[in-house]
Length: 260
Image 1 (cartoon, rainbow, N blue to C red):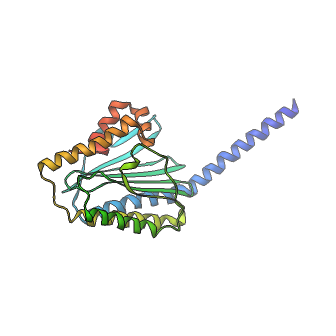
Image 2: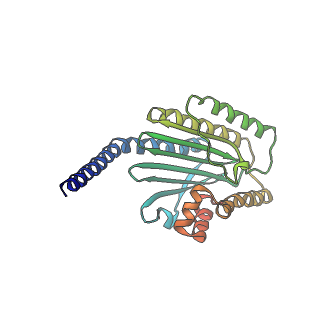
Image 3: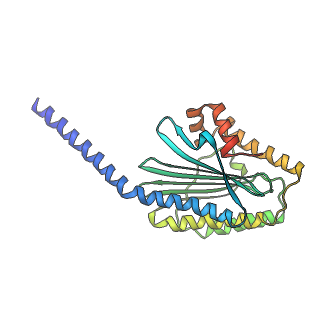
């Protein structure tokens, strides 16, 4: 009996020590991670704002979005004059911080851009994806892709990760997929800024779409966002499980991937 008590006491002490260690790690890393996350969003917005006027719009009930009652996302939405919709989602659950920014263009024939930066204690995962949701691919567009490839190559010293295969892989014209540490924060943000800036420079040479082309562009964007729900995706599947298919579609259509 005494042996059992000693074993149980040892297990209890171990659990308490483990919880305390996790608490310390969160306390040490969380403030720096939140700062880095907020900076990544700020740089994304500032880069777009260098070229187009951003106006924040009310995203209503989705402003504070909860999934499974525990994951709380702060959601912001912007109208990008002459371009389309921009949505920002951030969350801080102590052990992990995450920022997602999606620029969905419908007024110029430029690609959709998605940024996902995740921070877990001292580790970082940074994704910047450019989706080939364009009506026309010409020499200038090919030059943009070449420029993006050159930017990506400048950060080869940071570990590259391979994302899981997905149905939309054929739509991604370029992707930056990196895994780093705190020391890489500035480089990862600068990588994102340079990639995004390349797309913004390209977009500034494009005319605004006429009514017919605009309708085609909206339909193309909608095909992608509907496809995420109908065919699945890592993040999308979480939303569908938490909100249901219909509510997820409403959120995507009105906020995250708004195309009108």
